[in-house]
Length: 129
Image 1 (cartoon, helix red, strand yellow):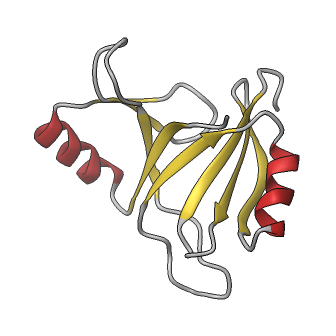
Image 2 (cartoon, helix red, strand yellow; image 1 turned 45 degrees about the vertical axis):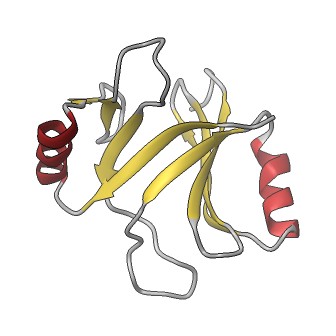
Image 3 (cartoon, helix red, strand yellow; image 1 turned 180 degrees about the vertical axis):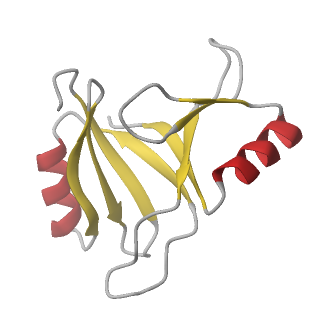
């Protein structure tokens, strides 16, 4: 069964958001060494309940709107991203950002549910380029 495996915080000012979450919750936020501007968030010790996430510059728009989305984004692990993108569309959801590679991690797409909530879907694939 697909589960939430990651969250993202989109921010206008990444450094300001980084300081906010580090100062308030004590999260460890470090620049990711990958090919894009992305910061990894560690929210607790390995083996404790909870998930870790990421911080990035705000992006994405609601279909037909000029407004930039302002939300946390939870990402759900799926075994076949194409199959799940089709299911999402068949059940009234919309694809906000088509499937794209996260090199050496997998395939990611952003979608809206029927209530216009943004969420991510990710298919792990170490060969993604």
